[in-house]
Image 1: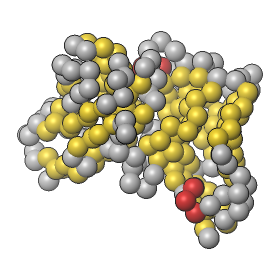
Image 2: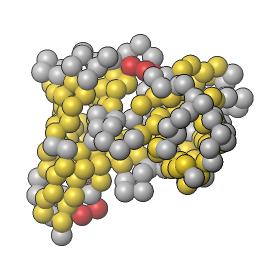
Image 3: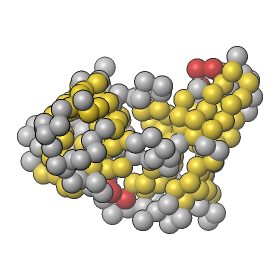
Length: 110
Length: 111
């Protein structure tokens, strides 16, 4: 079973700062997901990537397959970015091949 | 707008009682999933279904049951056999083995 570790667990930053959240996994994967969980609990899928880099607005996700590591970056952070960010690694073999990290709780202060 | 609707948002269960959590999607997705989230832990898969009238157990299926009679609906029943049901439950859907859309969740507590 894949082990997915996220760091940091908690992160507080000032508005405008560049944010980096890290995710490492133990077993080779075919896809990695980044999710955003709002304070009410609902989850939004941000990215699914298998190589390289993806960008959407102020969010950038990168993955290094050889090092089994992915990062989520937020540029020009804003208080509305405050949420829990979750990475999940898919190693194949059916729906139970998706392993979730415990999440990074991000707070952006004005 | 297409999406996933979970209801109710909050649910309370008495000892020995079965309760059913609703999940409906209008995204025309074949696959649907149920996850459980506990404080300080990652989401864990309870059940999933890739097609109508078929479903498979996930990592923590004991004490839960599901049905998939319609493509749009995938209700989860938390039975009295589930001894620690207090958690946040998330439903998701997708077109393959990986979820793409999630609902807003149901928080289940014990009275």
